[in-house]
Image (cartoon, rainbow, N blue to C red; front, top):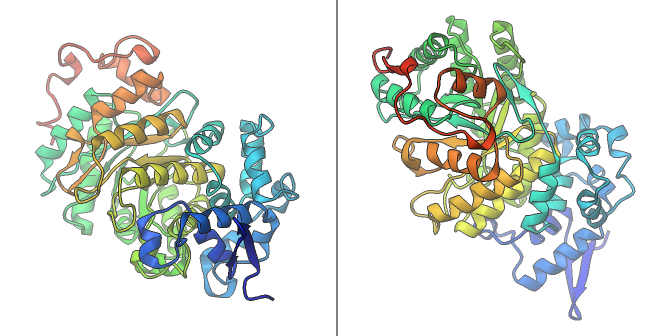
Length: 466
């Protein structure tokens, strides 16, 4: 094999790429994490050459050249062992560039993309995304439709759900309940009522699980709850009889990344089995909730020399194996070391959503940034609007856009309401019907509006209940 098996010429300059991993990295749109890892293209010309070489690469190459060795990585083994040759047959003759063209064509409709999903590997999805403009990522993702269910139905056409995130820096029950009430009155919470605990131990997790279960039961809310703790804590809470709806875990795209999170595939399978045994869903049995984010593999020194976006796409293979209700990328949370500014965060959010949807995942996004990034809320407005147009399954809802426990900026209850109104999107149908029964929303469709006064059903509020 030559020292540079992949190459392309731009303006009489020959650019060589030592292997598929190097080619993928050099073809990636610029981001600070790849510069930090030392894998990024050295110039715009080298990046263009990489994209041209990648466009000419047969898709089937990804089935014979692993970016992380099969023998050394259980995520690679999962990707290879679960790949559907039958589903892949429809595009097996294409190059990466041809695949992009096909995805943008009318032939790639919702039914065709759903049938294709088991035949697409994460590396294929990442590769084709590197050749796409933002509008391409939006157009194709819009055609992908992934529907999941637990106590309501997420991902239907014309719908966008929200995670109500009532975090509190001391896990104060009254503070959490106040945020809960605020969010419900804005129509937030159909994806999940999900708390990041400030005190992460089994006793506190169990207390929060019971609190949310009581609220959901008291008001007969057709939604689900989740405490975003480590999977082992959730398992112990289940063993103690806690009414757990969803099992949460952050995941990565390599075995070593997941090891740094204290987990493996077997542990995730055990947790899913435990949650299923509780039979708490009413309209479906999708019981897992995963979060991901570009840069996690690099921060754990577990990226194996891959670019961060390809690592991220590989995490979606992990998620796909466990039939989750929800998956989301916390796109700007890790910081400017990985996504430097608003432009990079916007691009990453669209890439992540596209790749996950192409692989058949119910993808949402935490449209967010940290205060030391070169980004602001206007950038988040842009990404939120683009993701809404792209058919994103759900976004976050936080009081005032500012998570006072995790100390980062994300989307607020009114941001989600804005997106629904402007784009004509509605909550999950079961949750929407509840909002109308409770007189929180009035009217139909995109014209849903907040009432002028607190609904009588909430006259006692949630505060005494806490």
